[in-house]
Image (cartoon, rainbow, N blue to C red; front, top):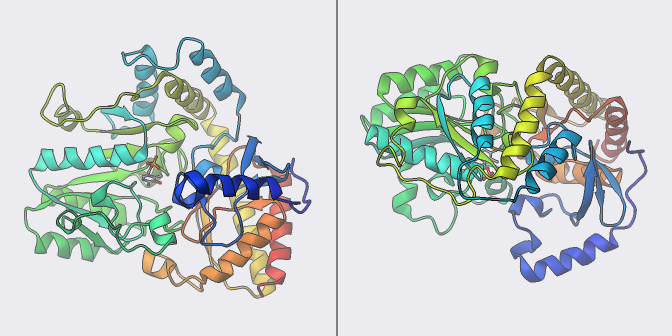
Length: 437
Ligand SMILES: *Cc1c(COP(=O)(O)O)cnc(C)c1O
């Protein structure tokens, strides 16, 4: 367990950062790993176990980003490690079918009634990109509706008013995306059904799909308003458009069957990632059989992947999902209880110190927004005092608590987070807020 000793020197990390900057733009292979939004230099991770990360200088941190979502069972969870080792002995990849693909698919389908058939891909980006192509093929329509602050990976048409790093670094739409493509994406405010009705009225018979994070994580955590998801389901059905639930973050996290189970809604297509790969690169898109059977080689919609269904990734996914399925009755109540303690405990420390916060949380994902709130959409999230968040982030890191380095990213707990981690985190927050009140 991580004692609350302040992080020491980071000279090794600083040297590694300088070396990385020679090779990688910004020194990183994914922009959200940089600390530009919060200041300070990112520690380089050497290893991790349970809820705890160890950096290149031997400092230890309680981890609240969990590889951005996948590590729901904590780091180096023995069944996952053993499954990967066992699979690796039989070779890392074949480019031919294996039984493990159907084994994992069976588990995905058991958790997700909305998924009758599916395809494995290697990332969430591939999953949403492929789901959009399929939705356009199904409907013969071009326009996609998404919501401001939702992030669906970095495919061209989905970077319009996107969340995650796009929001963190204040990029309204990515350079390099042709206007002709961006024009086919309508970005509407989240939690506003009337805006979606207006869009359908303005583009009759032209909207192929509505894609959303059924609980937003990539603008910070924003839950759906009561009736919002059911309203979108009804509206898309009435208008002949597909509803795509992007559960890359929420799948197997907010419930075993994700947000669709938690809120009792159906979708035409579902995208998954993160947890389904147990820390290895896996994405899923799936849904109604009649739609999925339009994919090659059965149908005319092309989609492929050299490493899709990779045996090591399948093994990690099977080990993770089988544990979650067999222990769901303990895992999800435990995550709810530990997350409630730490998110509300930190918020209480803020209140005591006179720091204004709005806490949003759904199960084991949540965000402390540095604004009076409420935060029900991206525009409200963007009211947050990001400089104050940056000071909070740095103060927490110095005390050995590593939060996601952006106001616009949800924090996650794993089953490895326990009483000791929670107490240490709340104590660190008490110190951090002393300088912010
Ligand atoms: C992370 C994420 C993606 C992208 O997944 P990658 O594996 O990073 O490509 C897509 N949608 C949502 C909701 C995500 O959280």
